Length: 410
Ligand code: 7TS
Image 1 (cartoon, rainbow, N blue to C red):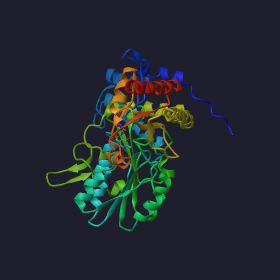
Image 2: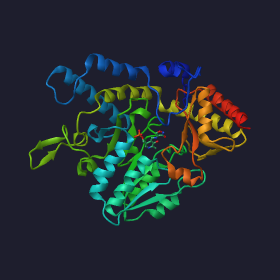
Image 3: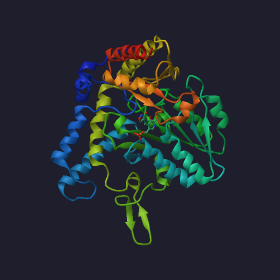
Image 4: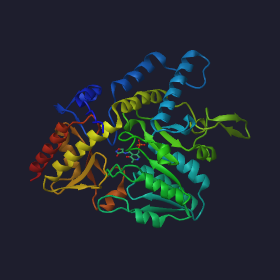
């Protein structure tokens, strides 16, 4: 066995300028990575350079500036293909983010193929982005939305999932990792079971793509979506992967320029994927910014990222468990590096506000997962979510500051 070279976190932090700023007179401790991640210089600089020196539209111009921008975007599509090990670049669709990826499939696939009496299965821990689009298409089509329940640790009940599956099941849509609980779902098994029932399966990879190696061919999922801004890239760009056979069968999601083969006043024929799903001028600078973000993750290495983040999770879990009155919500045996918690001494919002005075950024609220809050009987939680650039010192400072919050309220 080869020993894993640990991450040089101090060196990494220098690549992320915002990590060096002060907030409320204290060094920023950024622990809201499940919401969005900070950007390395390589991303900032490539976008800056594009706007300064290379800006032009794509796909249309005969002039060199536009051709170069088109080539740069094509290169990023290729990078995305390799990043998740898709078979073809035509299976990579640029979206605004995970939310658009779900809507694109719920509309382009769900609206086209679902019929009254069909069933769609989601899980009890979905972000609203992977719940509402399916709920709405089910309402429209007279299909039934079924929900895989979870246990008190925030783990899906796989026996219940098996019971829900039937010949009526047409689509299964599940988060790879829960943003509210941190649970890593057994997606490979979920995909296998869904396929056994003849359903297609959509994986919401918003919380996984920055933390583990994704291999869509190995997973054998039909669709996989993630967001650029959660993978150290720009906002306004995301990736939807779909198996070619589905993309060919699906209807376009939006209509307009750049997605057609021919147009008359009576009819339109559409271009092939990915263009069929990318109407209008794409977010060119954001696509170009996504490239170095994925490079940064690859170069850092997912095995080293996972190992460092797991240490942060263990430390945070231990330190929080030692503070009387704090209850961690989400205690699955396989967890990503985030801790969601409530305290009997303060409301999550007060915790967030006081920690902010210490320069610590955490998210508080329902995390766009209201049914998860209902399941655990809480109105909101406080959530600290870690990335590979966070340090043990930051985790300890966060836990020490929580103790101070407790003193304020007692
Ligand atoms: N799915 C999951 C599991 C998510 O965590 C999020 C965003 C989305 C979908 C939507 O991603 P978007 O990039 O399209 O917005 N989650 C969070 C969060 O936990 N805090 O802010 C956004």
